[in-house]
Length: 294
Ligand code: HH2
Image 1 (tube, rainbow, N blue to C red):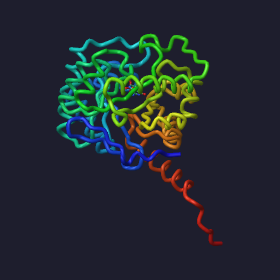
Image 2 (image 1 turned 60 degrees about the horizontal axis):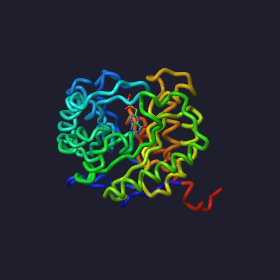
Image 3 (image 1 turned 60 degrees about the vertical axis):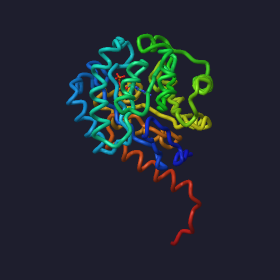
Image 4 (image 1 turned 45 degrees about the vertical axis):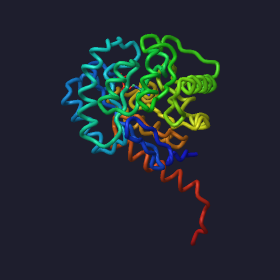
């Protein structure tokens, strides 16, 4: 089943994120030396901006700019350094393209600077639990927010994660985080949910979350899914990170079919085609059969 988010909009300053009746492709721009798949490639601002523009040409509907890796075991980055890396890129990209820009950060000061520089969405992998000042920045700026499920922190999250019922636990987490966000003054239309594939989860947990993704559509918020090139795919197909495009395609197709509203991907052109074909098939099977001619 596919959720139609056509009428949903979320606002930061005067810019809207619109859902045109199909999932959105969010292109990843990592201004980091150590991201798991492309660390160091776009650390230079000009290279990051050029990469962002290329992703838009490839069909990105949104861009997610991040300057601190969240890969398992990653070292934290201080806020000055995170701002130094991210903000010039956010400012240049927001000026150069019409697609909405998201800032991938857990720090309120970085989020504030990025929103001032033209970002409209804050992708907070701590779901407002990391920095107590974050929620008020988002309320004040009218930005969107991604509330992602994560067990522990990037440093610790892959140390023997265990769940009784991973889908139920992520669902309860969304419920609690939405209540918290609303109690702080956010409105539902500002919220995007993300099960946090690979964040404190073993292979079986990631597979179960993807298999039952449609369980989360009942919250009435778009679902963001980030599977691109991740380690669980490498476990299934025994391929290094740069060779996981086919594996990513399969996971993107399944996520689209089960109700994902935003796909966070590195390979925008290819995954956009995967999304288009998956949508066409889903929509065809959802329509009543016409009489067949022999
Ligand atoms: N995955 C990564 C980073 N940020 N944010 C959300 N909301 N959901 C995700 O699944 C997600 C995310 C990891 O990917 P990448 O940015 O390529 O790597 P790194 O964190 O090492 O920079």
